[in-house]
Length: 198
Image (cartoon, rainbow, N blue to C red):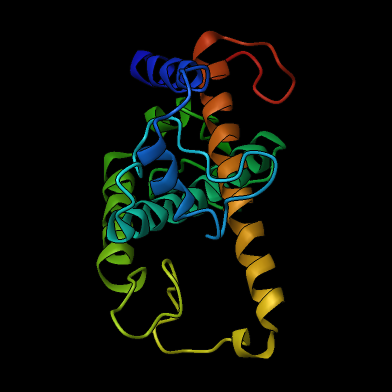
């Protein structure tokens, strides 16, 4: 947890760093037309991860950002859903532990049996290795997991596709900050209505 807080502080401090040199600025300008480079910040890279202008490196970072954003959106939705008292019906295991008996947030890790955690890790592994892959030659863009299927995407105009990709990227960024905030408040013992005392 301390590492996350330190990383957040470093990223904030980098925003106030002196202006970049001309070569770094021109390298970042190479990505000004990419999805996610939006007003008012444009291409915002306070840590200089794309300062060399390498398109392959940028694509890898964008792939990771999209995937983390999708995971964060699910995590945030899971947090607010369970904290609102909405749970799956029935028992979690054969010993009579109900889904509603599982605590919220980090406290839930203590309530889920070891076999349940192993199942979750196995399911994530299957998704990572088999389903959520960017198969070479089948995607239109980085993070396109349709892998040859259309699913209605071809019916949108190019402007609409760009807008939808921008919306997903920005929602993912917001969800990453949101779930990080919820996790931090939970660890700090916040009494916010959404987090509550654990």
